[in-house]
Amino acid sequence: MTESTRTRTKPAFPRGWVLAGALLVSLALLANAVYTYLTLTRLRAQYLDNRGYEIAAAIDTQARGSGRRNNPEYWQSMLDAHYEVYSGSAAFLAVVAPNGRVLASVGDAGAILDPGPDLFVFEEELGHPRRGRREPHPGMRGWKMRIGLYSSSADFIRRLALMQLALAGAAVLIILGLAFFLLRTLDRFLKLKAREGEEAQLRALGVMSASLAHEIRNPLGAMKGLTQLAQEDLGPDHPAQERLRTVVGEAARLERLVSDLLDFARPREPEVREFDLVPLLGDLRGMLQPKLAAAGVTLELPDGSVPLRSDPAGMRQVLLNVLLNALEASPSGGVIGVTLAREGSFLEIRIDDAGPGFGGRDPEDLVRPFVTGKTRGTGLGLAVSRQIMESLGGALSLGSNPGGGARCTLRLPDPGLRP
Ligand SMILES: Nc1ncnc2c1ncn2[C@@H]1O[C@H](COP(=O)(O)OP(=O)(O)OP(=O)(O)O)[C@@H](O)[C@H]1O
Ligand SMILES: [Mg+2]
Image 1 (tube, rainbow, N blue to C red):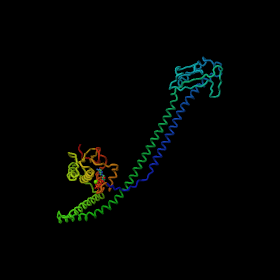
Image 2: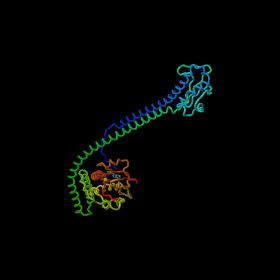
Image 3: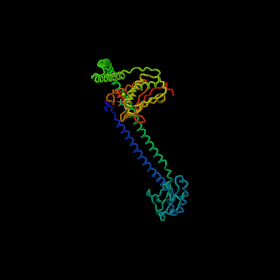
Image 4: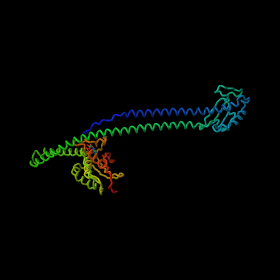
């Protein structure tokens, strides 16, 4: 199968760069968010540690200079006196000996030795070793202040960390969404520009081919007519009949090409009137019957009556083109099904066949004029049909038949369809 295609100039647009830029910015944002999250998580531990130090220092400072610093009872009274102030953030306050023995404590006694996951345990030797003011007292060397802090008191930092992570995620989504939107809009714009250029080219080509087709049509008709007369003169058994039949056949093919070209280049004005789609389809089946029988293909049509207000001649031409395509694609024994459906305010006529479908080809390419996969095709059938459908306020699209094969869908505005 040969496929004639036209070279299309693809709009040069640095799509890759835009995407790479958006991805890079997104990655940088995410990396920064994760780094900040980790830093904030570390800050949380630091916050709790500082808070523990603050409490220990406050109590320890008051006990400094006291001659009773080596007396556990003194520490008990100190802890008792301070606990009320810190009970909001600390589950317990305790003074423990280096061997782990609890010398004095207040608050949740069970948590001193088994704090569990909800508590952050701060522990430091008495005498502010952090500030270099250590004053070890004889008999209390190594005693430690142990403080069980509620981890939840630093939850605001976790919330902050999560919030900035969520913000970064939202920013990334916005950036990617914007990049996608930008690319899609640009894509549409460039396609529209390309299509406009193509349409202008086609119009010019149309004018040229229309005048050429017009000039060809009359002599061609004369050649075909004269050859048919010669066939009659010579009688059916003449040895030249075979060659003359070929001449008539080829002339008929050229006539069709010329009229397709004229249809495409000079579309006629639609003549809108009321008619019934079902008998029109029946007529077409009658017309195609010899071809259907030769190919061993069945054409199944809807029953009943479907009144429409549209252009019957245009619809006839479109349906003929599409049915011919389906027939040419159908294998022997295949069924072509025509079904009608109402889609909103549109009537959809679906023509399904059991052929090979469009394979990997872009159906939109096949609708372009002069694109054909057939050795004897003009590649104008679908282009003319789409033009007619659009002139009727409808559309033509190609897709897949859910049962395999191709589906051609014709959409028509449907003021007349009765449910
Ligand atoms: N039902 C279908 N199944 C498979 N391929 C299809 C079908 N309909 C159309 N095509 C493909 O699309 C191409 C274009 O179709 P189109 O009707 O425009 O031109 P054509 O049939 O080749 O020539 P003609 O102008 O004689 O109709 C076909 O050549 C064929 O390759
Ligand atoms: Mg065709």
